[in-house]
Image (cartoon, rainbow, N blue to C red; front, side, top):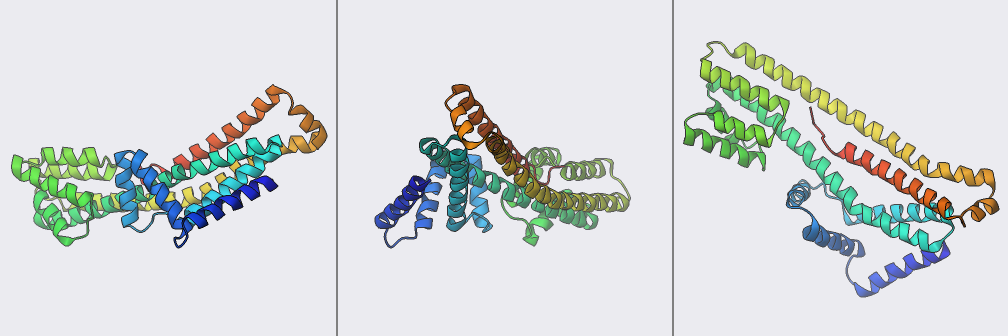
Length: 297
């Protein structure tokens, strides 16, 4: 463990000497950004760009602290499992390499929450405008001119209006928007507008009011689910971290000397590596679930 600490200190000293006058945390963040730009798919680049625009991207300090925490935790656990500095260093490097993936998941969650909030604004305000204009296109123009929508939804609404004027009907416009944002409230609202437009309903006030109530109830449920997911996430992380410690109980029961003697057997080594890998995969899958499908219905 002393060697790991010395290597970490040496690493930061080298960074400081090579990038004197620069913020080391900023340097690390810039290097991660380079990796994102080089290897990340186009869809994630758009998500990360919007996250930066919203001011919710991880700061260099947060990146650094996450690297330090995960690296230190992985190093300690791996050393207590295998009593090998080489194995510990390998696990430290692997843990640090996971940080960009965790940032990727976090950006997806922020972006998903932003999109759902924009969808809520789009549906609620379009219904209010439609109650006055009785025209889907005029309603969209009113929402667009209000300045409440942001890209990418604002740009997609412009495209919907353009398609409606080009085709003389709203069928393609509705299908286009439904493909991009396949939310229950969006599809139901559009279906209602299509029905009113084609069948010429004389009194749509009750239907619009009921649709608005459905949206309000759904939004309330989504935000309640978001709070429940955050609370569950904390407990999940605590449970996941405890799984790493359970294997150490075997060492405590057997005694350190007996445990170290067992490490000479190849199948014991494989079993311990499998425990660490499976536990890590379990935690990462939990993180993936927590950060994805926010606002899903």
